[in-house]
Image (cartoon, rainbow, N blue to C red; front, side):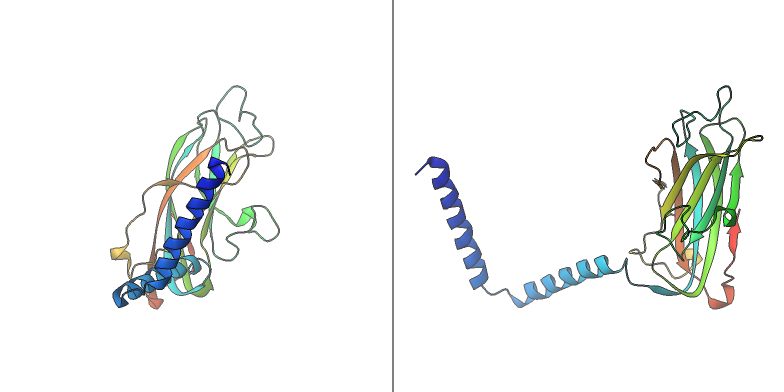
Amino acid sequence: MSISTSLTISTMTILYLRSSSIAATPLPQDSKSLLGSLIGGIVESLTSQHDSMKGNFRVEAFIARLENPDGKLTSGSSCDTVNRCDPVVSALVDIEKPSADFGSPASADFKSYTKLFEAHNTDSTPIGKTIARDICGKSFKGISVRVHVVDHDRVMKDDLIGNFRCLVDLSQKPVESMELAEWTPESPCEPVESKRTAQLFWRYRFFKIGKENCGGAVKAS
């Protein structure tokens, strides 16, 4: 018998003896309670993303900045041969089809997006605009803030700088009021296109509101 084979058999024997010893030793009652709580917490965390929520809520998304230092489009081309990009930023808070592909028949039409920002002759730029949506008594399983960024062309068709999906983490339960709501740390949204030439950064807050204050309208500022 080779040395490696002998070591393998010995290791398997030790593991078997250990597992048998553990199985034969009953857990104390406190340990059982702790283990049950841990497993329950893990299951709740995994399923909370799939369970629907219903109530009166407000989500506020602050679109902080666009970083596109090379002035590129998703095609890999430059926005302009002489000047820089002319970015136009539009957004939509989507609870109806939050996981649908951008531009697909199941997704919202870009014409329904709210224009938040536009600039001339700049590649990377602060944006500093907020889009909000009230969710009034509807059931939903996800919240995706969709952001559509194009390079505006006065003569030809606008070119795509990037589509971005900014996801609200529903495993973090909303606080009870706007007064208690804190903004999340700033983080990058998920670029949709395979050629990730630009980055978009955002933060958000998500909280409960009273039925009497729930308007259901999209607000931008």
